[in-house]
Image (cartoon, rainbow, N blue to C red; front, side, top):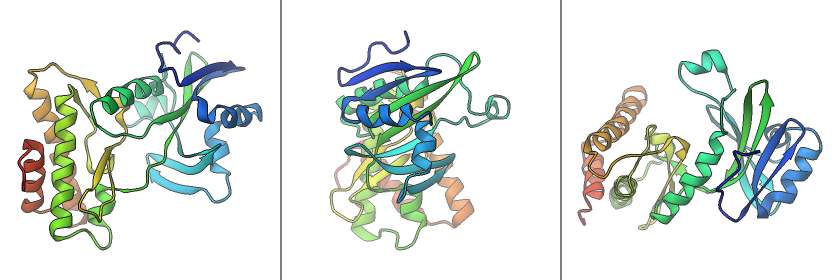
Length: 255
């Protein structure tokens, strides 16, 4: 397939009847075996004993993919197009873009789970797709602050400063995240003095011009809407002090 071009050297690609795959070398054997059994990667993951289930836009599954811990999800649309196209896509699969963007973000010091495998399946003139990404242990901001035993005191402050710094690095790298929201920031080591926020669902990230402050402000406004939505629906757990810490991290102001 001609769409599998310009990939990093640690990926390999192949076609199979009705589709194609792009896979990291470390999990290639496991993915080949799965697809040879005439099932999809997602259906295989859904049947694994001991799988973990993550709920969002459809279920995702935490499984062992060969030697690597992975999260397998099925590509699903959101918004108005979902009513008409469901899980079908035109053109190059979005996981190709996710692979390339993840590499660019990593080089800019923005951690995001690596794409381990992407598999596309023909659906007439369109396709469906499954994606496996590296599993990273942590909690997203919504689960962290709207679940039980939310961080407090200095632990809370340092998380929000780290999240603000992450968004600033994203913008300094020349990207915005159109779906920048609480669910799309995962915090590793949340209970320590060195929390490590990771950016999720980065396939929608897009480049903006160096002087495009309007796009960056709009991106921060998107985060504000997520913040306000959770406070409205779940109770006002996020405070002006939290926002001041986020802003300080974004502005790179030391505590």
